[in-house]
Image 1 (cartoon, chains in turn orange, yellow):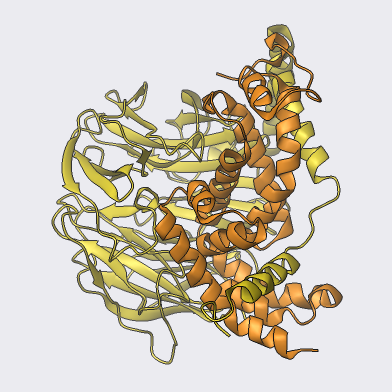
Image 2: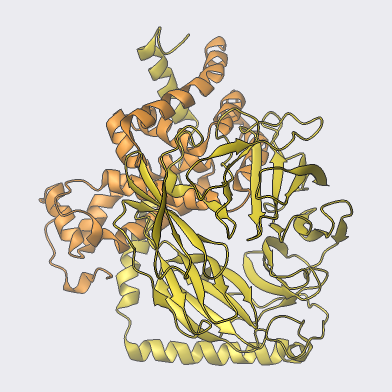
Length: 190
Length: 443
């Protein structure tokens, strides 16, 4: 059932708590949903970028995830006091779907060197890091980003990824191990 | 330096490195996303009268375009299922675009062409044509993604494995038909599961699906009647062969007698490139290692794999080693199997590196007949003898179009989805991919 904003009860988003905003959004209040979503768009983008490694695809994934979240907002548990883990899970799954298209990874890897060349000033010194990141699986990159990029706890990472805390911890440390060579290179530079 | 010796310092360095590797988003990203959200309910509030007027206008415009540009070609359509005019014609320079669709997926069954069209609203419509695309009839409309399979048997029984409507929900979205696809009924989930994998059907009756019941607990269910009834076949708790992979996200290819294999995604482990197979309906699993291509440094961490499998166990495995250091994909190799992946013939080198363009479109009909896009994506490579001889159809599509995906129901009859400058078109071939004819979308 599509939320119907015309029939929704509107609340004062400036005064409402997150729990009240979630309740209103579940009833179809688009203003409440906007208030909840706006601060999550950039974290969602960063998570998508960590998986897709390309700005355009990451922005598309976040936009599609936001639309999916709005379509499915009535399924969010009524006791939820935050949209964050639920929305990040949707972003993650949107990225997985994007990557399911055949040979997607091959094209991205093949373009890595080109990206570095085109944005030399911004990416100078990052080639080894990008190469190392490219060898880490997208799901492990997502785990790494959620843990260190977004500073989520292992339990929160597990909740977003839909896996056990021990599996999340294993992913984070496996991915971290793959990045060590790039970190050493970074330290050696002045 | 290791995480054990200096964890805090290393975690700070990790944060710095990761954050510096993220390219900033467009400044207006948040505004664009929120504007799209706000526009959603507005579209749903359109009046019926307004919608009808729009529909009539679109229909008139489409009819005009079809009449002016493609009318002359309709009499020269290629031989495809349901066609009474099996004459191959010359391909023009512009193909009709599937405007308004966010994705299209064709299917060929005996006597019919099907196209699934997904729109921005998130809904997908299944169209059927019995005259090779000259006329279309909508047969199913649902809230969800493009189907992965549409199979209709000779007796009219069939299944449609739909894409999940909400990627986070991992639902079972399956439809069944008993009248050749004229009508479809949603199949209710047979058990309560936390997550459903994507079902896979060897034919219109025999299928399998993986249901995740909770942490470290999953089951394989099977059906022999197109999903109307299911039995719980085997528990699926094999973490050793599927390290770090969510069980419900695994796509298992099956034969009709319960053999099957999984092609792990890129980066799954550091072992040799391999598939994980079962010969007992999923009760036990083991890795199967195809031979490493000579001169190639291939592991599971740098090999892109894809596969096709027929109900009798014949099939093919495609491998592209990824050059992580220099970027790019040096070559395409293929293996044949006659025993559902227990043993692999080859590898046979099919092609060299792609010269840019989109990802390869690949399809294996069995262990002998394979198709692959090549060059910049506009050429098509075809082999009918397991790769011993490969024929190249250079620029098989109209100028500017490149293959995105392909599929064949027989050695002759196939479909392709292709794009040119953002325009998506669907093509049919009746001669094994040598020539392609555009499909006119439903008006």
